Image 1 (cartoon, helix red, strand yellow):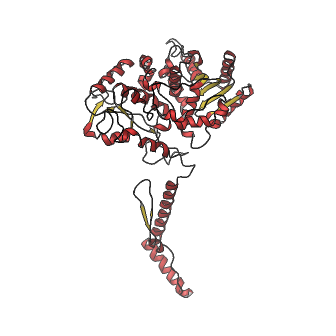
Image 2 (image 1 turned 180 degrees about the vertical axis):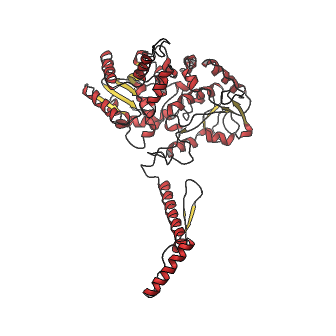
Length: 495
């Protein structure tokens, strides 16, 4: 008898059960002497021919394969990560992917642009690039081909050797709704599409490829200018002026060096007012997590309209009020962060990206003067990059004294150890009404943890006061969103 099992990683697998009969021991009705002789001869024959050992190995392999098929098909809860079926389905069913209801620049013969995105570097590392790439696509009157967030570069749904298991690829729409909301239609621009659709309508022979000149690509045909706004204009002219349907930019127009330099400040004034930023919103999946906890976070606040977040139909933007009772503290201290802080101190690095905005308190002495001695400089960077427990408690105490409306503390962090629990205990002893650690108190469920960073960011965006880490891209993106919302600079600070 043949049994067919579904296989999510390839074609169906068929198992012939008749083969299993050959692996079972044969019964014998012979006398004991004959049994002993036959058994001895059989064992010798099987050992000599390797048949018994080979059959046992095959049997174990079949059982293992069968178990994997069942696990991947049923896809149970932990240790398996979420599958994001709804988000993948929404991306594959976008109106702009169908043959009906298309705008100019969409469909099989539309105008598209695809940029390279970093992999395995963290969500906010990718987000700050995607926002600028989307901005360029709108300016160049092209549809952005967006990639999922890629945590691990593997063909499997997750990296087996990495524990605990987490999704190797997460749809970008699980984090943000901007790539699906269709706000571009309001701007008379083509709507964004998933990268897999771009590959379908833009085979290599239809692509106009531009390679950014760099140390790794010295023969590239696109040499970018250093000024941020001039670079935006340079790429905008290239995208808008090309008559090719598909344009692909190889290399990063906005790399780490760009965000370390003053270039990000050059383009800030126009970028923060752009349609991409004006209509930016986190995904309904993220906002729903906050809605479920709104009775604790902000009992008097209105819940998010998830339908409005998912789709943009007007030039008007639904504005949200600040939660003036919440002090949000960003405590970055995950794997390898201590080494990052030390490296920043050794080269006297500036704050990253939009954390350098001069009107924000806390960045006036970074980078320090050249004449500062090394020991003092390293101490300064440690205080700003890795604040100690007593410094954190003292800062929270000072913020409450300066801003009497603050009653609760929300902690954004990437660690889960005794240190962060100690911070919470200290703050509770200071008399705060509530002290939340996002990953413990707001999104503790297994299916929410992977997108928890976006939950942290939305709560920090709306908090009365935010104290961020100047060397973190997460803080930089929160700063950008708070600046877009018109929050007073004194309410956005750094360690």
